[in-house]
Amino acid sequence: MNKIIVSPSILSADFANLERDIKRAEQAGADWIHVDVMDGHFVPNITIGIPVVKAIRKITGLPLDVHLMIENPDKYIVAFAKAGADIITFHYEATCEDTVHVIDLIKKCNIKAGLAIKPKTTQERLYPYLKDIDMALVMTVEPGFGGQEFMHHCAMKIPKIKERVGEKFIIQVDGGINNVTSKICTSLGATSLVAGSYVYGAQDMELAVRNLKNMQ
Image (cartoon, rainbow, N blue to C red; front, top):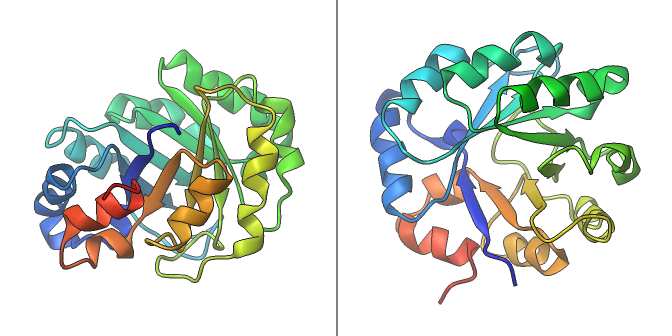
């Protein structure tokens, strides 16, 4: 079984103590730091942007896993890369006809490219781009807010994507991930898990991360 990459979402961190909470996740064994960027248009919420990514870059050595839930992502790729993003994931639904162009922009920045799909978007929409991206992100909640309930039917997209990719390809899942749903996703072939409230709401963050990695 591939190593599970745990990427805690700072959407569930204490924004007044963001450095502290990122370092807590790092010390607990997190592999990446997941940064949810929302614009209030593509999703009905507004979160953080380029200046925060730049600030986070200075206080952690972990890869920054930047998830753009925004319209017109092509306008911001270079800026997020310069701010310190190691992976930029954008939504198929935000680009459609311009998907290849956005992937090319990310690749020119010499960082990993991810492509995400919402719950109502079928996995077939990803197929034309799998050879060009490093990661597919399957949303198991409607993007926009943390703490939502896991949608089991969305997880069934994972094995269908898995059939078409190589061993090094990353299949990430985001939404309602906890010690139970994580096992569902990894058993289906997921190799990266985004978890916000489960990690940051845990009394023992190290144990929570170990649970996601399926470590005893």
